[in-house]
Length: 326
Image 1: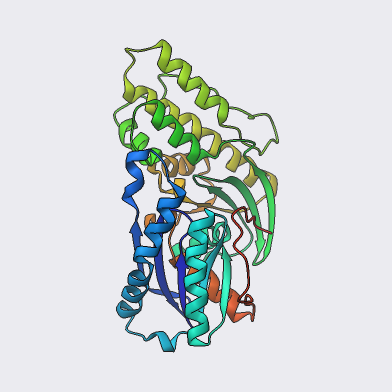
Image 2: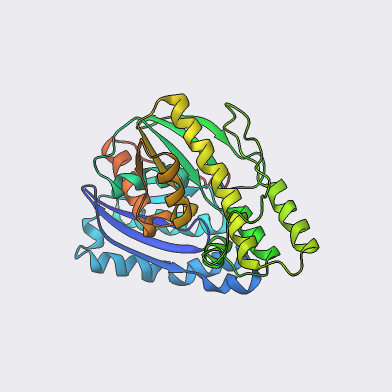
């Protein structure tokens, strides 16, 4: 089965071709126009998607050595994401699918992040616990089987990626904040400042990062001469330590033998090392770095799974900016 995947949920325009469970080609165009604003401007994101989506799709088809007419279906991100960005991707995909006379399936971007781990480790099997951590979401899921998911806990306010972005702004760093803080933290002492860690009570699988951000702001205001490297390292550690402690608790509660990390923050190397240190007695799966951030490979891969089961979307399906995993 030949599936074209299209992703335009935020500021990455991406396309990929999946053939019988294997990613044959994947292309991505990152929107650098937002860097000077310190965050994504929705209207600009939509315009940038419109400029490049046709080119990206044709490049990935050409690289796959197939023709558009040979496609069996199209998978596209339906949500969550920015409304205008989602509309661009879905409208393009609907038009292409109608023209080719093939089915289309709207994909949950978050669910696709989870299934990107099957691309990293084809031997991965159900059940497993997943820490889904990105710019907009921080959740822990018990993945029981395909289509059967139990939400164990999530953030009450800021997502971890959002905390990184806001922390980077406080420290005068660039966007996106996660990689900027990680880069600066390499030369810092992560134990030099004891930033607060919220909701670490026994059996609590929820998160809260808004207080940590406020604590960072107060610390920077009161300690003008403190080493920025130490601040960045300690702030990063406070975020990651909570993520890993909660993941370990979830693994212990469920009795799962496997845990996976999904989403953009999964690219953080300190997170990877800390997970392997704290949860050393379990199988841990990380997606490839290219599959951590928004990409179309995961959309095409999950789309093929659904289409093979006979599931497809009507052509009048709506975008769902606040889409949640069922």
